[in-house]
Image (cartoon, rainbow, N blue to C red; front, side, top):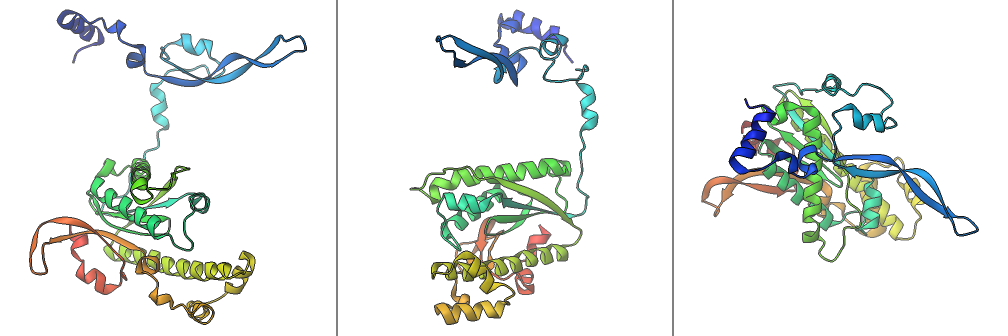
Length: 328
């Protein structure tokens, strides 16, 4: 209940601290803006500098509450009102509906360019996929309300429990937090998985949110993503085998145009003696990330949960064995 003057008096009397002597960056924060600066742009024939007014990025620690700053920097804002409370009226907060399972799907932006710059193997880079799985595992530790994750290629879906109150179900905060945390974990783990490869360009992950009222719909969503994993990976496996065998990319796309799953399996077997079903399960089925009871041995299970990463079909058998996931 103290006022500003009360706090100033407390600091002065008890600690001999004059609050006004504290660094301006602490008291006023930092303002970053483009300021008008006289800059040398070239030199005339006689060696004299020719200067022009340019906008340069400036960081300053000064008062922006009062009219003085805005009076000197009217070019920043063209409107004359600088009161700040009214801006809260423009804050559009969307609360996600209650009694719904929240699914956040994270996917990498411009991943083709990112994978090219970092020389990822085509069609699948096992180390890069393992890095995605490690990042997903850390997401489950960071957000206890995540009950299940599924990922393949450059995307990962996270299912939050039905009654989560994360950020009071504020859509914007959930999306920004999930994408930023996943990006941070990916960068943090990079050296562990690519010790001899520099992270030349930072990854960029975007997020979207979906809400489902029933566990069955969540399971159908996850089955859809796994079907998409199969379709994409089978196509990409055929495509890159054709390209590596000498076909150009346009020709490879033309060969695969309109083919069904069985056609692609036959192509791989006849042209490259490859059985698609022998490809690693992580490539064909993606990765499931979830908590399971800690096993000491086949017969002994201790209290506690570990994050598991498996590569299995998410059919009815899987969900019958893991029904506890939705009961947590």
